[in-house]
Amino acid sequence: MAVALLVAGVLGGALLLAAAVLLCILNYSEKLWGPIVSILLGGTVTAIIAVASGLKETRTEQGFATAVVFDHGLAAFLPFDLNAPKISHRLSNLASLGRPATQQKDGTTALTIKPAESDDELFQYGSELLQYQVVRELASIQRGGWSVQHTQGAVQQAVRIPVPVSRVADVSGEEVLRRVRDNRFANSDIERFLWQHGRLPLPEGTTIQLVHMPTSQQTGPEKRIVRLVKPWFFVIDIVIEPIGGSGPRMVPAGLSVPAETRAALRTFSYKMI
Image (cartoon, rainbow, N blue to C red; front, side):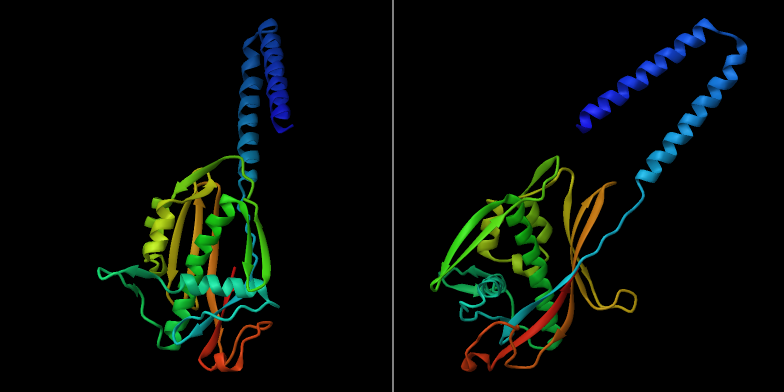
């Protein structure tokens, strides 16, 4: 429909232009130059105003809160809760991503990060981990598909529908890996393998960037940003910002964890906008 309207508009404009040229030829005189120049200038100005008004910047913002559970300075592996399968699955994914490892020469595996020791380090750990998870989730959603998982007697289904855009181009996994290499949670054998054999479909001409904004008086608390940029079209920022940490034995609401497991657990909360 949009193409048909565009074609009709172009044809109509061409016919009007042809008619105007014919009338000018049939009624030519030097006095015609004044109105012709005025019409051309007026049309040009009108076109510029119309285009400029259509390019006016717009901004929308949405947000939600999320959490990372820690166990001795690392993202915690928790018992699967059949009554809260979604949050259990999410925390399990975070725990897996939060323990990047590489294989050593003797065949053993070793973590490539150190456990966080202070509250500041825990906040930074969680923000950086969520930033990397956003990239992984973005790639999963944009590739589309479905999954059915069976965990401890529970079945959990998921359907991933890519965002519909007119022109999509794959960002190679190697390029994504290059963009995320400064995030410590990308430094693992399995992550490198997945990206080397993966891709990230995005609107044509879009690039992905990971941004770190340290705490300052001008920008507020530390922020981790996943930024999608298509020049002259859009900038999409997914911002992760810490909002609070708990004492020991605390877990996200709705999650059931045995008392003996809670002793070393702490929950840190983050805002995502």
